[in-house]
Length: 443
Image 1: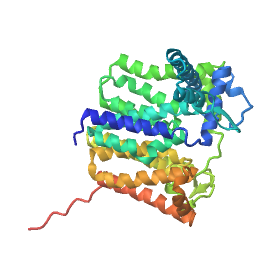
Image 2: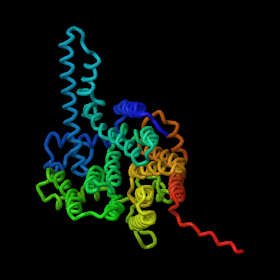
Image 3: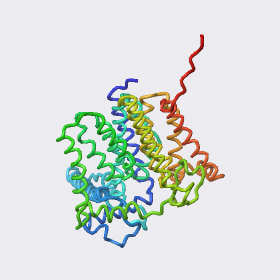
Image 4: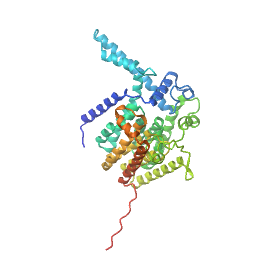
């Protein structure tokens, strides 16, 4: 389906305006913590950020780079406000007596308006924090188009509920992490493939959930092209340099020691290890919404170990399939789907948002194999329902909320079972499951 460039540009603008319109309609509690971290980095610098033990909302649980982004958001808010105020002043000088009331109202709202008396952050600052995820949405739509060669699939992404729900309402940065990690996978077999590990490192530093792609990415990087020693050296050293320079401002220690002894504890070990955390995945079918510790044992092994074993099997499956198809693009993205969606289904401790990479890779596969689209649509809707089930915003979906709360445990288990079935059907339709050879007919 060929779409004129002007139409594509118009669709992109409409999706951008729609997302900007949503930015001040809801504020997830996670954003309050992120805003507080950003103000701390901006106001007092990063050096003692992780040593601070007085926080209004929650202690820092994210890596240095994303906290630097939150601090930059505060700086961007102040800069945007300054430019807007200057423009307002100049217009009022040019047209004395004709106050540019609409711009004055916007400047006041953006710079000084508060959400309510209990939340101390300016609306403009909170809105600014959602701009990067929104731009990442546009970037993902472009990347889906480039991979599938079909712009309609980028458009499907832009107007799918889960995409604008996470960026424009929730204000999370999952889109940015997925964009960087998928760019790394897309570039790995190109002349600029040496930059791919650095992109994946940035993805991990933005959203550590990108770690789930590292084993399969490592296989792709070393199998696809004969790499010369200088290229390999740069590819291996550049991610470490990025980590060093983004982490060093936050500590007086060696950044690698800081990561090993402090960040690991702060980011990964604070929360109780649970089997399932509000996710409609494999484990919820059996335990429902119970808070089961993942270190509990099942058939001699912990639930956590079972999850890792299944994940290792999925990686081997993805690698074998990619080898069988000699690294064809469809096989590569089938591997990404197996690892990211399968990892979310079976690894313990998964939040609902961690399926984001799996859903986007599923859409890419649907673009490469259109017969998968019907399964992807149902899976993406269930993903959005899972997101909504966590937050119950906006209120216009109150009927859905009531439906979900009727026989809540049973209904969410059914949706979890559907996710598992859809995963299996997509894997089957991609011919990743072994087929029985037809018996030869006797003459």
